[in-house]
Every structure is written in structure tokens, then in C-alpha cells.
Image 1 (cartoon, one colour):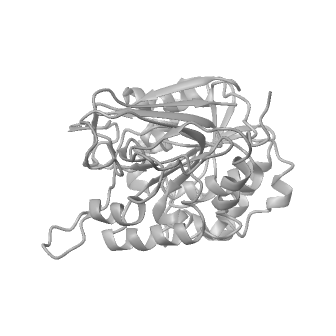
Image 2: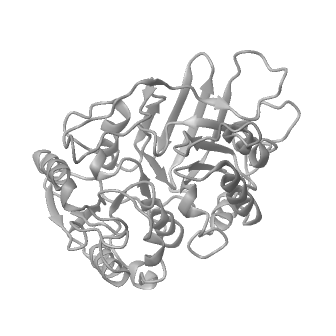
Length: 376
């Protein structure tokens, strides 16, 4: 049975399908073309046909091309029936310029296709899920998908796009993560250097809780990069509040909070799991952004929250607000579980999270974290 809030899933990706590569935000300058050629060649080696867009192999004024050109190319690819997936090289800074330029009414008649990426790419992925009802995939960008990148989470990205509707996709917490990037211009074939031990935490567990506590919650996934999505909150492009309200209905939702005696945020229906990651926001900017989300209704009625490892520098000044305290301020009092330092975003490896999919998250200190998505 298809739930009324179930997204429209694109057709599973198969060898022989056409993948379009365009850059709706930042393009790829000549110094990085060797890396781009490598990852495109890797797609072709897996049996896919690849078509490059005109807005790809250049970077001027922090974008691959003027906004009208980027929007026109993305629109054309979204409308084409022969395109099975669109995978940008990476994110950038100016995807927000496309949102008012896309023909949303016309796109409602288009064949859904897989869209994969994170960072600024999540700016338009979120809007596509909220406005068109398509499932979209927040995960590694094309420039991450190099030959030899064999960690389990990155391998799962393309496998997930090939999964049929109704599939159950399980991903587990990584063992280690990467703190520094290698310059693709110097080492085009580099893979992740996973050196730092992964450790998820529950932000709002009660002070007297036992050393090992189980956290579990379920709901439909929605989210992306906080730096860019905060600017869409409260608009038609970022109506997460409406998504939460549509997902909530009669019936129960499984969500257990660490703080005894507090009712889950999502007391009815399937609930929603909001996931966010911070690329560059300072601690104070993060507090401001979270308050914008709260005022826009993004933090109300949730089954749980996932916050990725932060890629922003943390101040060491004695009088400065530290990052962990900045998280505690807007999120610590939520009556639903909040897990932080999760495998999401700019500190790889990362999960591939399907916006709109039903997910169950489990975590404890002994066994780590697990996320199971149901493409239903």
C-alpha cells in the first residue's frame, strides 16, 4: 500500500541509462578537469552513458555560468524523458539563484529522475522534493565518486539509486572520517583519508542517564546543508513546516527520547526526521540560523533530528561561543532525540539520504549508529 505522503521514486538506475552532468552552482575550472574526467570515466566504466552540460567546465564569478544559463540547462535536463539521473560535480554558492527561474508547474509533468549531491546542491534538491514530490538523494557529489573510493557509505550511493521501490537500505555509522581534503588539482585520483574516529552523540540525553542508552526514532527524511537551506525557510522553496504537517496524522510513531517523562515531538502519524549539516557557519551564525528554522516551523513536530559533523572552524578564544554550546542552545530543549556528529555532509564519508523516504534511526554508545531507509 502506498502511503499518501510517499514520494514519487525515480526508476531504478541501470547500466545503459543516461546520466547528465551539469553544474547548477559552482563549475569545474581547468585545473580540476583531470579529476572530472576521472569520475566521468568511472561512470562510463560502470556501463552508464554520460552527457556533459555546457554549464560545467568553467568557473566565473563563483558559478559555472550566468544564472539564466544554469537554470535553462537544468530545466531542459529535468524535462527530458531520456535522462535517468542528474549528478552535479559538487555544490557551490549560488544555486539559490535558480529557484525562481525553474518552471515548477511544467516540471510537475516531467518524468522523475534521480538527483544526487549535497552542499549547495541540497538547495534545489529540497525544493524538488517539497514542490514536485520527487524523492531526491542527499549524498556524495560526482567529484567524490572516484575509482578506488571503496568505503561502505560512498559505495552505497550508486547502489541506492539502483534500488527498486520498496527496497530496504541499511547504512551503518562509519569507523573513521576525513578531517582534511587533498587538492584534486595536485592528486586527481585521491580518495578519502579516513583518520578520525567516528563518534555520534545524543545532544539532549538527561544528565543522569546510564552510560549506554538506546535511541530510536522513525519518520520521513528531509533536510540538507544548513548554510544554504536556511535562506529558503518560510518560503515556497523550503516549506518544511508544511511537509511536517502533511506527514503527521492519526496513529503512532516510534520515537524514544532520552529525557524521561517528555513526550516525543511526533506523537501522530509517520513523523519526520530532519537532517542538517554545517559547512561554514560560525557558532554564532549557527545559532541565528537555527532560530530562523524554529520560527519557520522546521523544528516543530519532529520525530528526531540528525546533525552532521561540522566542517566549520571552532573558536578557541576563552570568551567565544563554542560549537557544541551553539548546538545546545537551539536544539537541546527539543523533546525528541537529537543525534550529532552523524555521517552527513562535508566531513566524509556520508550517508546517502533519500528525501521523502521512511527511515528508522538507532543509536547507542556501545554499538554506534544505524540508519535504515525504506523506499516506500
